[in-house]
Image (cartoon, rainbow, N blue to C red; front, side):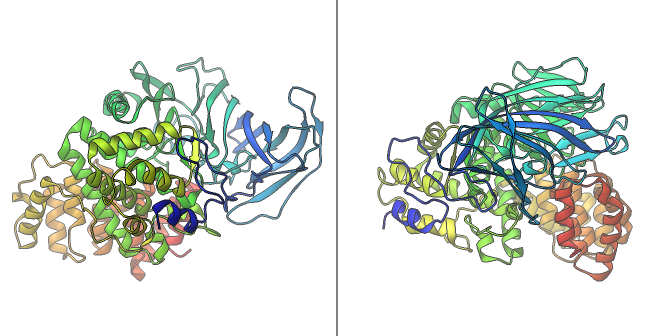
Length: 622
């Protein structure tokens, strides 16, 4: 059986064969299990958003106008996704004509999917206006008081729409199958600035009335808004930083290599197609390292280490400008098409800008994280690149598997076909599917046509199937190695054999080496060993949050009480899940640790994003 036949019949995410050779058309995909939207009847082409920001009530209020393509002339009901929205009125009509009120209803609320909004749509209507307001508990919004921001002068609001949180602040077809352009008008209290992932004035007058345009069609999870006391600093003609006043200069210095990253990525994968690439540095409560909102990456301040040691995050979010934003997974079951590709591109960009060994360190550390994740996961399908997320929250699939296993799969193909050939293949993939949402069967069909058939016998369908579906890693996986990590292994061995850590040759170690040093420690260390490590390297008081998170996992695992106060400050001061959820997970393994974790969580909970709260609550069995 050929690879095309194997995957076209076995994958459930498409209901007809991939596009024929040479065609850029996306296939008709099956209904998205994470959306109520009847996309076979209607597709949003463009929408216009008009919202006012009310910090006192923690509400966005206004309306959205959807401009629709009719796919089924007989359809009389439009179904949209919502979650916890107050729908006030709905009106419909032909494009460009006056709109008239129509009947609508909201289904009962599903705890994951929210409520379907059903709107009666006459045959002549292709435009729908919905007047609505969000609720304070909207999962896609985080409202921060002035005290919860970095500068503590003004309140702050930011959105997080991925994966299915856009429906909590806009009623729309909340599925990556649908891509649309949009316009927006956002009204804010003066002197706060609104920014969106869209075309906008770079440093406008803070008059509380802001306008935005996104000309390229994007999926709903990439719609993004932030409002706060922000300043702008350019880094190049097409890159810049938005951040709170005390942060903006440090951030601009930390990420000054962004333009160089863009140029190297363009040389390999083709032109950057989004105009500008700016970064918004959010308050510490942001639950992710970064979010690849087009034109304006949202990023955590925890990557501002002062030495550019964590800028791979910028490389990752920039890489999404090709993999994810330009070519998008058509369903969350295909999440690896976004993140596995992006991690592969990230490592290539890091190599190009900072050298081969820096890239090797990033790859090796990511592979080690994958091994830990695979050992922890209990569902076999969650260990594969094609999990079944039906009936589950797609946020459950945000693990190292789609990211690191996906990247290892592409590195495996690169090794088999050669870097030059594989780079050209990826560039052709992005060009052929630009501004489309795609499925795994589409990728496999493209892979067969462009690489497998011209190079018979290099990779078999069975080998590809093992990468996609086997819960165990393929036997011929190429696990990345770094010479710099061999030095770390030697130093760790000296320490574990009783050596004084203060005498270890650690000068010049990178952040990744320090992470690897701590990751490789045995499950159990005694109090004397922990005290010696902390005394030698001041791990409890370090500025680098990525290293601190690894250290506090060891502290929690070994119940090392002298570092508890520092660990608690860490857990209360940031909301990035990568840096806090593993610590909570270690604490939760013992009764005393679990009690401590619950107490800290109760006190820190108000400062966490709803997504982070859910993740921690699961770990603590709340």
